[in-house]
Image 1 (cartoon, rainbow, N blue to C red):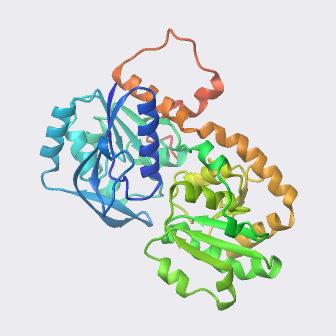
Image 2 (cartoon, rainbow, N blue to C red):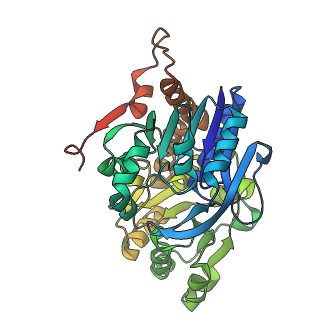
Length: 396
């Protein structure tokens, strides 16, 4: 099958959509499919799969949903996409955030093959969807299949565009994180707390930093490692309490094997996001690496972490709640062991090969390929990818 994956976010831009697209590309290619990633240029650098990447236009960063999102700008986008589609002759197109201007919208307008769209975003309200819904409706109708990465993402999309959505979650390279070795400089008997993410308001980093004085009072050998960069990184570093400075390390962006080793060094992984998270790939990475999880009790995270079973869920925006959970795990290694053992089993469901096979089934449905005469998969494996009809009167 010749597959075109169209995405506004890809290397070198970091984030969940980038990881989703890259690993889907790898798994589809390993299964024998011919795959191209159609995206834009963002900053310097490229991708490990750059030979199969087609870049059109340039992306700029704009604030959206409490985060920073890449938006592709090119006045000739439609014409350039038409040339790409004519040359590549894809069998199916897969658009990530299909209503994102201008790359994905132009792709929807130019597509002459079945199109599958994956919705990633989760928020209580979308100004863009609300204002431009009459215009976007005609684009949505061009999607042969709609995927949401979680119930939270499905609810956001279906609020404005009711219809049938299959839930296919994000995935994780389980083996890479499972086999990673701790960093020697962090393997010194200290109690390591890890945060991974962009420094932006919705990630809630400031609440974890505010929790550190209480954590240090109870756990004097605690160390917080903050992995990631972004618009607030310098601000957070300059506003730390003096007595916490020697216990907090800011690394900036890291990736690949080094990122996996930071996870492997963590006793506790903390993600104090305040909202707007449709899923939480960082939680999967921590689960695969064997770190006990403390995460905000928000809808996207509840789909990954089961409170008191595979992690601890805390009140969003509450330094006290974060501190209490971390201190509890520091004092009770038996609880950490129980949580990480169950999380290690649960994360296998999100292995990229399995997730990609579910995505491939969506492609086949879009193409009208009927495999009903084949042996059915077990019901428990169908559960997460079942299509759910969500109408105007059925969503919450």
